[in-house]
Image (tube, rainbow, N blue to C red):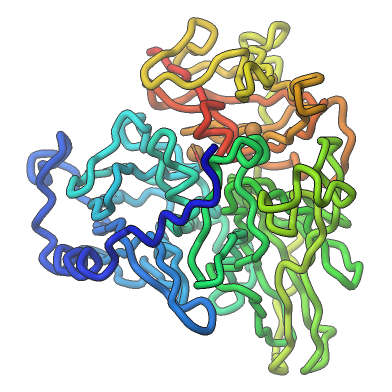
Length: 518
Ligand code: C2O
Ligand code: CU
Ligand code: CU
């Protein structure tokens, strides 16, 4: 049995980091992959970026800096403000693009491991999607060129090498990819310093401030990797200093397997203005909202009634999903101990603090209309009466989809769709029944690559707090729940992934290819 290993101590920090920055400055050493030629593609980018994955270190706590893996970026062509570093964070630079932009990203791998980057939520050709079959070795590079077709929204990027995604994201490799468009600009939401990214992650640290990744442990791979420290934008014990006015908060759950049940501690409702695929038509209110790994939510947070000095918190409320050893009552059993530190999935905690530090002179009111979304009509789906069905089940101590696990190139007949079609897909979280360790009930956040979809219906619902409105690319299914989604398979043929976004479930094989045939 493998447990509590400290991989990040062995990463070979200093030298690789220095080498990598030299590479970035020269921007000429992109030389080892099948997609290397920059000259003959005919692609003229609006934005041309070098993105390097490399080891590094960052001071997170008093004492020793924490060794991480991280993305560093540099704009080679285009507006240099399209890459935004978050100060003091290991997170990758925020990439900003407009709908209609042509983007080139030259990924170079300076890790002692193979990798590939996936643009989570972006609608791009199959070769540009960061499928694990496209991994590049340490020293290798990959050239991405795509048109940004998505509507305005908060997308993100992270590595996707098979079996190593959880480890690499945990090490620090992740960043936001924000898309803007005319409709969004016209909505009149808080902008500039009032538009704030909030990336939620949890991590486990040893006494030397180093990351501990223990997903090799069988129980941890059942629950996923959980940490007992909450980081916001890569920073522990995060406080957001605010002016007394309204903010747009873009929340991403970038955790490996932790689910947040978000609420304000002063019982004000959450004002939700956007989901994975951009702005909602209008704001909706929720007492609390579930945010599972991979999902995004945008909030309109109005602090105009605050006095300077006032503090409040965004919290994660406790919840119970029925799994043994999970939830607030399961501490010390399977969900506790070393597997989630003292914070199993379902425990309650503070996510971040808000502190009013400045009187604002003006305020942006909540726009009555945010965007336009055409609802897809299930009648147009060619398989309306016979949805494609995917059962999420435990098989031989592994999470599976329809009893299958990931194979690099395999795609079944029932995983093949026609280009240009609209389909209903049904996902069913059936759990594992009585396993040798009791009820194997786990939530599964299900994600489709390359597409945004709409939720048609959700059944067997034991919880509220879902935001199924708007465009989505990741949906949470609690044990016993069944969801139907409407997916338009437009523009791009090829091989894409669908999987559970609990990264340890994914790495264990709870992932499959689907194929879009022309
Ligand atoms: Cu963010 Cu295949 O995932
Ligand atoms: Cu994705
Ligand atoms: Cu899962």
